[in-house]
Length: 203
Image (cartoon, rainbow, N blue to C red):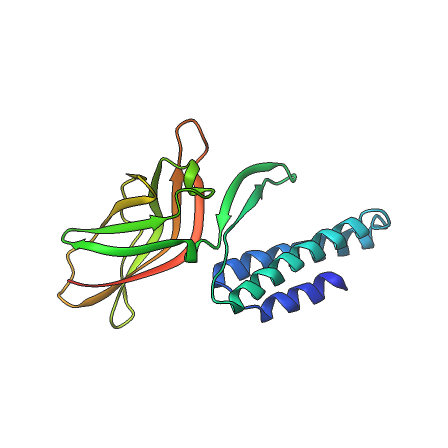
C-alpha cells in the first residue's frame, strides 16, 4: 500500500519531531479513510486520487530530507484544513534556518533579537512578530517556564526584538527553546511560523 510505504519512508527522514508527527498523522488518517471506504465498497473512484495526494506529500517530504542533507532547510507554506476539507488558514513550516535569534538582555524578561530576510516571503509581508510557544529549561533539563508571556514587536528591515517573560529563578545557566512564532499584518490572519530555536543564557 502506497500510504503505508510513505509513512515508513517519512520515519527515516531527519526532521523536527513536531513536523514528523503532523505528516505521519496525515498519512495514517488517509490509510484509515481508505480502509473505511474499501469496507463500504466506495473506494473505486477515490482511491487513485488519495494515493496520488499522499504520494505527492511524501515526495515533498523527501525533498525536505534532501535539503537537510545539505545542512540548510527552506521553509514552506502549508494549508490548514477544517473537518470537511475546507482551507481555514495557513502555517509556515520549517523556518529554523531562516530566522536567527540571540538574547540581548536578561532581567525579569528576556529580550530576544530576531533577524530574518525581509525581502523574502513570508517575512516581507509581516509587520510584527511574537513568540507563540516556548519553554525555558534549566541545565538539569527541568522546564522552569512555559508559554507565560510574549509581546509582539515590529519588524524593521528584517529585525525584531521580542520580550519573553522570565520568572524568578535561581542563578545558573538556562536555555530558551522556541517552537512557534506568530507573524501578523494588519487586516490579515495571523501566520503561525514553526521551527525550533535555542538560545542559552545565564541568570
